[in-house]
Length: 233
Image 1 (cartoon, one colour):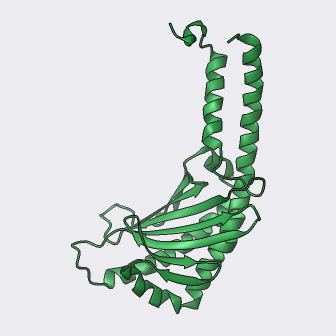
Image 2 (image 1 turned 135 degrees about the vertical axis):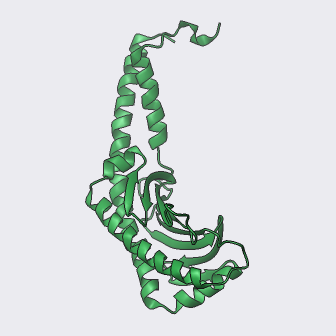
C-alpha cells in the first residue's frame, strides 16, 4: 500500500487541492516591477481572406502573460471571457476601452483584407493572415511593444513601436512594408495602441490579477494550516 493509504479525501482536502490548482493557473510568468521578469499583454488576430459562409473573417485572442483571457470576433464585435481574469475585468473601464480599440483594429484589418483580395495568388486559396500586437513591461518599468505580421506561424514583417522601424523578415513582407511605412497615420495608429493603450490595459489587468493571487494565496495558507492541524503525515 502506498503513502496515500492513510489519507481520507474529505471535502476539505479536495477543496485544498482545488485551491492549489487554481493558484498554479493564476501564477503569472512575470511580475513587474516587483520581480525582475517582464509581464506582457498580447492580441493574436487571425484573418481569413476567403471565409466560408457563416464563418468569421477575423478572430482575436487576448493573452496576459501568455494565458488566454478573451476571444473577440471582428465581424460581430462579440467578445467572450475565457478565464477567471476575463470575468474579473469584464465591465471595467480598461475592458471597454479595449473593446473600442479592437473594433478600430478590426476596421484597419478589414481594409487590409480588401487589398489582399485584389492581389493575385499562385496558391489555390490565400493563406490565413496572422497579426500580433505585444506590449511588455520590464522590471525597470520600460515598455517594449511591437506588431508582427505573417501567416501560418511565420513572421513576414516586424514593426518596432518604440523606434517606429519596420523590418522585413520574409519576401512576402516587403510589399506591406512599402505600403505602410509611407503611411504616417497607420504607423502612428499602431504605435499609439501598442505603446500607450496596451500598457494602460496591462497595468489595469495586472491589478486584478494580483488581487486574485492574494485571495487564492490567503485561502491556501488558511486551509494548509487547517490541514496540518487535522492530519499527521
